Length: 497
Ligand code: NAP
Ligand code: MG
Image (cartoon, rainbow, N blue to C red; front, side):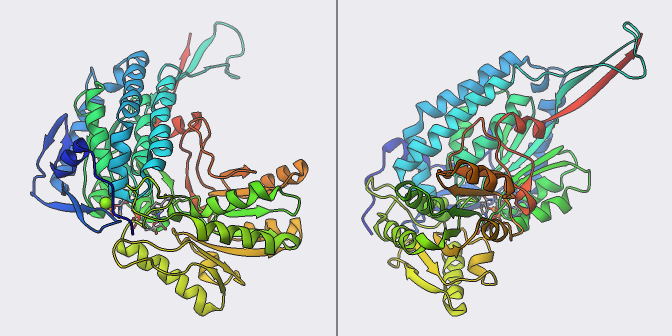
């Protein structure tokens, strides 16, 4: 592996600090004094020591968020125009610090710094600004009542109010971006927040917390608790938390639903996927091949939308498999801070083991390995982009979420067949369709049971487009105006005159 390029001094200073918890506007030591380390997955070297929040810290942070919400002059009572300005400022600060944040992200997560800069940081800044616009547009309705049909008899209307104290738990694949998807709409709606980043990648969220303070968010409105799964579990079980927003594995998602039952807190979930790309025989292969490859290899397959099932119409099957395998072989893999790198390492030794386990299972189940399949080097969690053929629906590589750069290329003959096979999964997050036939494109989109369907593109997300899962890929939507439903509740007011 190439050696990392030197790291900018500001970022180095930040990583060298011992990171604390942000509770009620102050950076504090964890009550029980615990810490954990975060590592660079490209070098396996320790980057930073980070506070491990225990149950006492969860209580403190929830109490602070509760006060900041319930207080007579709390965040929910501040005008939408004022909240809008503050949320907008966070977006501006992310944009101003994008180089620094991208470098930090690259070190902590392993992804190429250029991609972190041009995708994650740009999207995060845009998202805060998009959500800032909604703060001034949270409107209810006036309602005509059937029980009082004549004018002047009654006056009924609805008001949209923030849901309250929100615990937000995020994963390690797009650390700052996932933090933004969660924090921006919650603050825009007037909720107060406790954010729990993934233990593998806490650094950009910690830096973002400083920027949130700088933007003028009042004390207690935004709190950050770094820690482990138990920290998240304590937040989810806490009786004074009104809502949990979670992104991560389906398994933990199910445990959150159970744990939230205590006070029936609201829950939104963005979970796993086993997404499909469908390439019809009339597709423009110059577009379809790189997009289908990117659909599964982007972010080293650590994408909930990773299209790890690639359905190809039989007459073009060999050509598309050859094209996608060529992309797999030519992606430049290396340390994220090397500007030449197009793909970094997996996040951890656990993920390397998990992905390698799927590859091994594919081999022993009788699938044919066209390219890839091996770890690269023995330092860092690098792995080759991998293409399998001759898979079948019973094999784990075709059924289960891998969360790595591994694709099953599957031939199909008819429209009916591919729709049935693509839908044969308990997930339903995303899908891609490649064709020049407009009718076929929209027919396929309408029959695929997925929260997002991309046509002749993939992974094209936008702050204005709602994102979320059908079936076991989740509950609720992020982004677009639909995310507001996650952070607002509706009060109906009915006056008989
Ligand atoms: P995970 O366990 O679901 O972790 C996601 C977040 O939940 C992390 O912040 C984690 O904290 C926290 N958490 C863990 N256990 C919890 C609990 N009982 N209650 C509340 N919060 C809890 O995911 P993972 O173990 O990192 O990854 C495993 C697999 O999940 C991946 O291979 C992939 O298949 C899937 N995944 C999906 C997504 C997605 O975007 N949908 C993202 C990441 C992973 P800690 O980090 O401290 O454990
Ligand atoms: Mg790390």
